[in-house]
Length: 149
Length: 149
DNA sequence: TATTGTTATACTCTATAACTATA
DNA sequence: TATAGTTATAGAGTATAACAATA
View 1 (cartoon, rainbow over the protein chains, first blue to last red):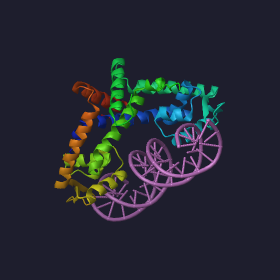
View 2 (cartoon, chains in turn green, cyan, yellow, red):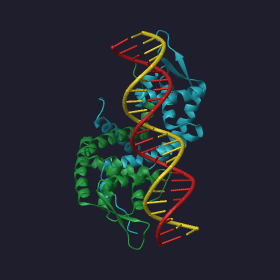
View 3 (cartoon, rainbow over the protein chains, first blue to last red):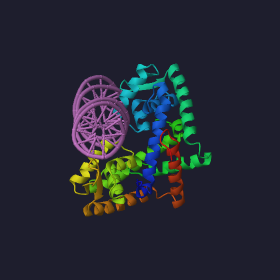
View 4 (cartoon, each protein chain N blue to C red):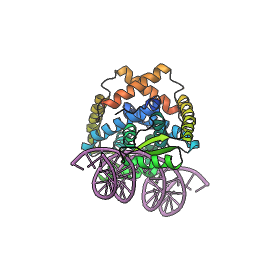
């Protein structure tokens, strides 16, 4: 069978980025599954641990998801007692999100698994290569239609 | 307001790849919208133009989408008379997909727009940088759980 | 008036199972 | 029995509008 050529699509950086990102996301999802964490839930937990007291709006902006879509994620973390929605004295509209001890512990374990996943996928790249990719990705992201900075 | 840090997530190459890919996909979708082409439809059209006579199964494999999800894409291209489902003498189960003249013309115009989009987003990167990113992306993709080669 | 969190809704993308007609 | 195309369906992810409580 004559094999199919995708040479014209492969010439687009975005095409290869999409495919590689799919592979990375699938691998990360598998790495987090033992902790019953999906990628979005994991990302939210990491940010809450790193930024204790932030609000859902701040978290949504940092994760680049809509506030409305964040609700179920925070619900899940709270139901599992990994985080708390703390009342904020002086503004009763908002919650200050903090991780519980169990949340911080699960976060640490999941980060170890995520780092192992990262190391597995990036094994062929030097630290310098990886840093170059990260800065190139941030440059590309900022070139897109969207916010500044 | 103390701004939120995502330093721990940004250290993951996959995190920056995901965000950059989102920006690229959104920009490409906007670039293709004037042609009434979504990214998947555009990709299918390019592959059919490049590989005349290929089957839907081959196309699905090349695009890494399920055969079932490809049907509506091919339906759309056929309904717009951009491609043809040609009968294959000797095997009545399969179709040989070919682009019409209108399909090839639209493909050419859309490719020009896609190249302009690419140039806009990658403006900060040299040709050498872009080639390095492409090979790094392919290396990462192959390191993921999945097929060989 | 504006903002926070929330609900409901819808649209895309993706994945699976099962069917038909052919081989 | 295996394969190509198809249908139906369900699950994620994402986007918008509207609402109640509060500022």
